[in-house]
Image (cartoon, rainbow, N blue to C red; front, side, top):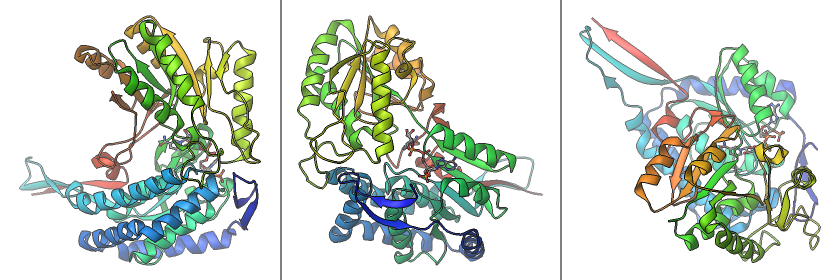
Length: 457
Ligand code: NAP
């Protein structure tokens, strides 16, 4: 499949786009480089004003409805969630418009110099390779800090969301950012290598799968260019005996099913202690069965189609392989035949042994893995027995248990009595095979800057 909008609800191809030629890529990089030479001299006040204007455009009721509908059309996200995503993009723009001048202010440090300090300067063109699952949010959470820092951005978005990619370029341009400060490159994955190798491109960030991240990082490494990688996860959701059972089940459903289960930080492994396992499971099965599948444009829909037919087929094979190795299907376990699109039933698998392939894989769709354990220590061991380390959610009302979980869970984030979520104010990223580096917060804006040391006698 090339670069195209294919409606995952109907499987209809809406519009195809040719990939840029190598000459066209060269032209866009030259324009980006030229834009950088003047953009780097703009003030924080100007950049803030443009970013605030982008937030305004994203907050306009009519416009935001259109952006949300575009996401739902291209990748099948339930429309209510798409609207929430547009709002969150406005939030991250406002956040960095306000905070970046503070985060990037020079810091005086006492040394043997007459004066010494650290200042933060832009690097140049930053390449962002982004996934389709949060087609607006992933891009704005890169663009807002990168542009505030004085960098310019080129975006290689996923091939199934080209119209979202073009819409974002348009928003930033309409907001007042100088021309070519942020450009969408409609290119295929194999064309990324040439962009990374180009001397004008100074660094790259990729959100997506492990193979894509490893490939980009290897090429960037060979060119001594920095990368940030936000990759997959198989986040644990631990429930201990003192947890608020109702609240934990409600959030378990949300944490697994948001975006039809296609989120890196979705809870994917539910680890519950013996004392409450039966009760928790009974409620979880009932809640999964009560979810409404259907047209994602309908505001009553909880679960839409998976974004592409390949994702549906991969998930289907993953579940079949798990079952062949002894996993039990407690609910769901197959496609949903009532609509032609990429629908898969909300599914719970149990009895997953350590040698079952799904034990250490990420399920990118509405499939939950259920594990029952004796106690907190067993829960932590199981949670950490994963190649991934993105986020972890743990439920207990005991402060000592909370402290222990925070200390011993191997993850980029631990959320106690809540689901893992991204927030512009908090750094976001993983450890192990979930990637490295951080987005958002103070740490996110420091990833793509020259942290310059100044010493004056
Ligand atoms: P993917 O195939 O890796 O695609 C992500 C992006 O990388 C797309 O733009 C894709 O372009 C591009 N790409 C693919 N192969 C590439 C290569 N060899 N070199 C350079 N670019 C390449 O990822 P996906 O499977 O669609 O997305 C889901 C994955 O992303 C899951 O594992 C999920 O957990 C992860 N994710 C992580 C985060 C996080 O913040 N940690 C957030 C969201 C998603 P094409 O579309 O043209 O192939």
